[in-house]
Image (cartoon, rainbow, N blue to C red; front, side):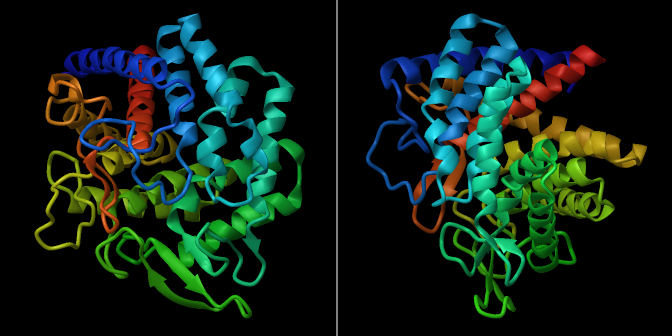
Length: 370
């Protein structure tokens, strides 16, 4: 696809996102959806855990960054303020999702220290999940549980450490990344969803999964979290091990995914009922775009950049962008939340829409920068 064609598709997708999000926040004010049911955001489906609230406000910030319309900024600020109390939430491992996509974007825009303090407080709170026996941040499931998803959240601890010069916070974030790298990332670049540890000794016991096909299989969104998250860890630390891990995950993704760039829910599942998991693709597109800037190898950089564009070319097609699906309220179709629980399967999911818009914003910036 020509760059000009993709640029036009990005612009069209942003215009569609404005329409969809305006309808959502005016029809259901102060409502934070997670996934659609039959294309509709408002329903009584199970949440499993409340980790998605930042993605709506994050999309509003991305729209403001795109169109510079003050109405969208006012909405982004309003929805971000609704989350402020979560900076002390010790029940989830997702404070990076909640505050990096919202208050950190707000701070980057204004430079106001009061806003920055909210982000720092969230980072400090997340660090309280650290298990000294085992050297990891535990998931919301149990103290003995480590999720690959936390690689997308540990960046807020690195950030808090960087802003406050707190060596303990830095140690916690770094040790978590090293533990995750050692026990959840496999030699071929695939990842496990979860690691189980002995709480008393810190001994690693086994790999597990909640959303993949099997404990030893390759859940696509988990790998996308790792790809993106280890890249973020490298951007803070410049530790070459993290860049190596991110690239191994990216290479696995590229080698195992069909040419259109959209994986199934799990690469190892034979004959999956749903051929696509669009949210994993959206996350991977942003992660690979980041990797293209992080790696010093020009050949690798070109590969990751081109593949990110390939993913976005697919996601902006009518198969995935819901523009031609009457009544559909999300932006991206064919996402999957929780396959095992049958939650949000072949639907729009809020993080998929967020990371899709984030990747579009990165690519648009690339067009501007040349």
